[in-house]
Length: 262
Image 1 (cartoon, helix red, strand yellow):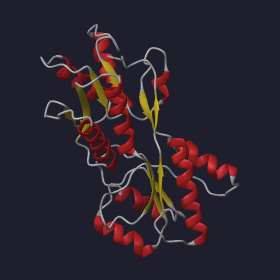
Image 2 (cartoon, rainbow, N blue to C red; image 1 turned 30 degrees about the horizontal axis):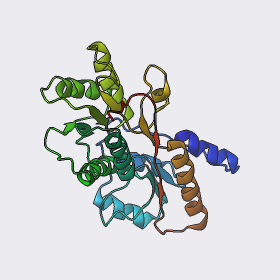
Image 3 (tube, one colour; image 1 turned 120 degrees about the vertical axis):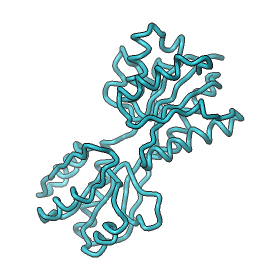
């Protein structure tokens, strides 16, 4: 995503440079980070976290600093900032339908309890596809993990695959969780996709490697970075304060981690 922003700056011969800050906790408020940027008199801000307080939203509107959110937004009326994001709902819906069309009905979803737009939308997409195909969802179908990393995938796989009512497929909320599931399967001699089918979301750079070969939903983060940069610099130049929303459509990357049961 950063590369997409930098390429936009270079392609358009802009004289701006990037100040970067890494948020260590995905649930952490971004208010202090924005304060740091403002103290450096930045022309505009791009954020990959939507964890911003309501009062601080009002403050940002008052000082009129352009801010664009990348791959995230808030589902609240007071969130009137511009954003660029993938259609997470459709991505989760499509990957669930892909499994169902391949004969899978016992599908588990490893989700997260992180308060974020992508978790809301991916959860809804999964549920909608299951409902449309008349597949009952119960408490066993969805497992919520605290974070969304490899360790969380490993622990979740241990719970799911050691239960009596095992699924035929597991959808992971992102590729890193899927890597953890794959690691658990490898260490316990569970064959992918012969014994269990696995899908991810994001299409990280490792997902296409031959020993992972993960079927997943592509999140075009570089493109999102470029689009977000274009919106931000337009706002910097034109002083346009209107909300601009760009939704990028997902794409299923079919590889070899799903077995057809038909």
